[in-house]
Every structure is written in C-alpha cells, then in structure tokens.
Length: 388
Image 1 (cartoon, rainbow, N blue to C red):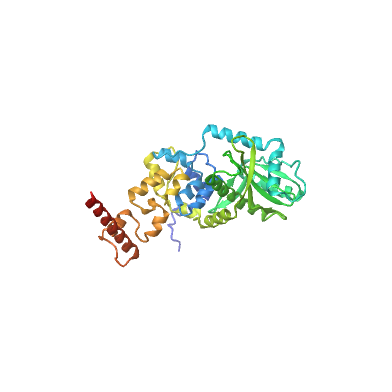
Image 2 (cartoon, helix red, strand yellow):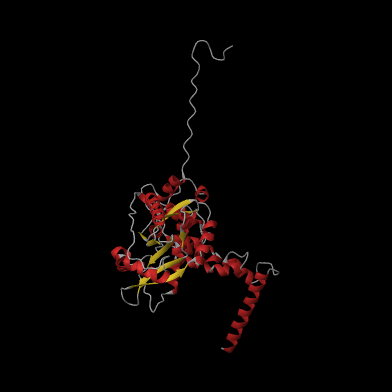
C-alpha cells in the first residue's frame, strides 16, 4: 500500500546541497592577508630571523600569509624603524651593478682568487642565462632549469638574481640571492653583495654574521635543486663581496656557512605547520590593514607569540609584542636566559612573590635561590643605609 494519498502527487524532497569545496591553504592565507592586499615577499633575511625563533607561531603565520608586518605594526600603533634609507638603498644598487658589470668579469675574478673554480685558468667570461618568467613559481622553475643546463654544459655560468623555492612549515617561500655562480666542476656558489665596507680585509662581525645566516638559507634552497641534478654540488663557502676600505672598489672574502646552515635547517624543521596554526584561528580572522586597530589587535592576539628581546632587532612587530609581554608580566620579556633559569615561574609577579617568601616551595632550588638573593640584597641595602 502506498504511503502517499491517491489524490495528489508525492511531496517534493529538496535535493541534498552539494558539499562546499574545501578551502585550500593558499586561499586561507589570502583571506588572512586581505582579499585585495598583495602578498609581501618572504626574503632570506626574514626567514633566517624566523628560524632563530621557531616557537613564534605569530611570525610564522604572518610571514607565510605575506602580511606586511611593518604596515601591521603601524596600524596597531607600535611602528618599528626597519629597513634601509633611500640613500643606502641606491648606493647598494649602484655597487651591485658595478660588481656585475661586463658580464660579471670582476665578480668572477674575485671568486676565482678566493675559491678557485675547478680549473687551472681564471675565467674570462661566463654564460648569463635569461631567468625571466611569469610569477615567482615560473621564475623558480626557470632558475632550476638554468642550473641544470649550466651544470651539464661544464662551463662557467652566472645567474643574476635567481629565484629559489624553499618549503617552510608546509608553505613555499621564494628567495632571491644576489647571484649564484656555477663552476666548471659542477659546484654552485652563493654570492652575497653588501654595501658595508671591508676595512683591512675584515668587516663588522655582526653584519657578516647576518649575511652568513641569510646565505645559509640560500644554500638550503639550492640543495633541494642539487638533489635532482646529477653532478651538482652546493658549496658551503659563500663569497661575500663588499666595498674595499672607504672606496667603491669591490673586494671579497669567503664565509663558511656550515654551522649556520645546520642551525637553520634544524630550526625550520621545528616550525609548526602553517595549516595547523591557521586551523586554530576564529572564523573571520583577518590582518587586512583596512580593518580598525581594535579588530587587528584581536586578530594578532589570536595567534600565540614567543617574544624575546632579540626580536627587537629582527621583527617589525617586536614593540607591540614587548608591550603585551610587559602588561602580562611574562618573564620572557627579560630574556631567554632568564626564562630558562626561572623554571616554572612564568610571571614577574610570581618571581617577586617567591623571593619575598609569600609563594613557592622552599625546597624548589629556583625559589631557594631567589630568597637567598633577596636576603643578600636586603643586607646590602641595610649596610648602605647604616654607612650613610
């Protein structure tokens, strides 16, 4: 017997709606950045800074999404003075053009003097392949092809501003070194051209260290390509080219980046995958600079940060994160070494209470040390008062 009445047609059952397509990671990152905001490129300098603080999910997500952290910091009311002056930028470009003039003749001479080249004679000329292509993905693919072709040809080749791809926390980052030289023996050498001077054969140690960390990122990216290229080998000694003394004449030194490469590689593997961080954000979270400061502040605070004083020299959001860390009384604002010494005491208030004997287990070595330090300080202040 039919369950429907004979006098009319059966009721219409609405069709099951088709499932919505899953949002890809790229789409999700574009939503976080803002639909009309162009992505800010992630360069090797930023990647080296990220590797130095792998526990900071905030920076990892913002860099992967292509958020301009300088613009974001300004919108939050905590701008940071980062970047070169226009004069320094123009001077650096002029010096780089001088080094690479005439097909890179001077650059190849410096490289042969400092590193040799797998052949007996100094190079007279080198192939300079065209690396133009559409978009960073196309340029990275064209660079990989040029490297393979130059290695197979067995001669000198100079790749001017190649594009390299490196996966960071499950998301691709595109990097652009100043130059990569292919030797006749198949060795690939990274060349970093800086505008700070090299006086009497040596340069500022801090600047050289920053250049080494930056170059180590390029070495890691090149190694990914070399794994698929027969006969290729990435050199762990990079060529650092700088102005000689107080002139505009180029000179060079060799920097071994094996230590920086190992540290950077280990730190990058510790980064939480970007999709895992993005999945924890509230629906509708965006870092679009067109939003109000209140909305941007809530969005930024929805992602965990790992502030340390070292961030002040490497991250545009450092002043904002420092202020929030101080408001919360987090001991991280005092430095990583201090944080490590304090064990389970995570706030300045808890540290002061433990030192005053108001909180904490006296059997805890950290609490006992704090109370002993407080007692010694009280004795010193009391003795000073008596002397006066």
